[in-house]
Length: 155
Image (cartoon, rainbow, N blue to C red; front, side):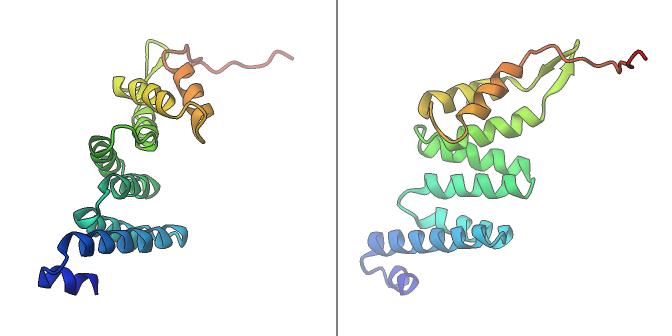
């Protein structure tokens, strides 16, 4: 019905909003069923018509992260952040992807610089959120000295 209304041009804004909400809701159902590819397809459609695309971009960000497509997850997180800079969760997923790209440099764990910035922004926006403890722990480990040699026990 919403697609027909959009095609006819009748009450276009309302029809697009309704279609976006329906596609997003259907995508969330597929997420719960662990059918990420179908969910991604639906969120990509929803983002084109939804009145609040930030949520659809975030859902894409999370779904791509779940299927380990980190490049696409980062892109979707950036779009979610651009669409609504006050939404906390895209910052956490962005930080998680970047944190996973961290490397040892001179014995210290160093992720890309944007990881710490995204973690800090997440905590600023949602200091008691569901990922707050993880974000704090990740921030503490940045620049932390990492033992890189294997030690044997003395008998």
